[in-house]
Amino acid sequence: MTRVAFAVLLALAAGSVLAQGRKHDGRHDGQRQMSQEERQRMRDDVRDAYRDRPERPPPKARQQMSPEQRDKLRRDIQDANKGMRR
Image 1 (cartoon, helix red, strand yellow):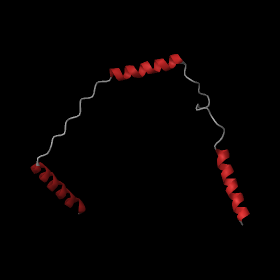
Image 2: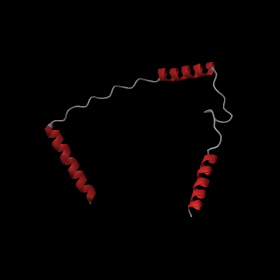
Image 3: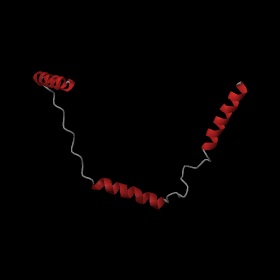
């Protein structure tokens, strides 16, 4: 019984190793490496695209809520939750 279990385990392990295929050097089949000029051109294109983009406005500063505002917000949320349970 243990020999059969070992044979099945060995077959499964061998199958997963064989399914991985041959090693690649990080490139997909049919692709070539970019030349230095192509890489530089791509960097310049990306840099130009970001340069042309409008700047984002700064995020609005959060204001501290007064205790009355917090209580009103808490009551509003509780009322909304009561309505959702129905």
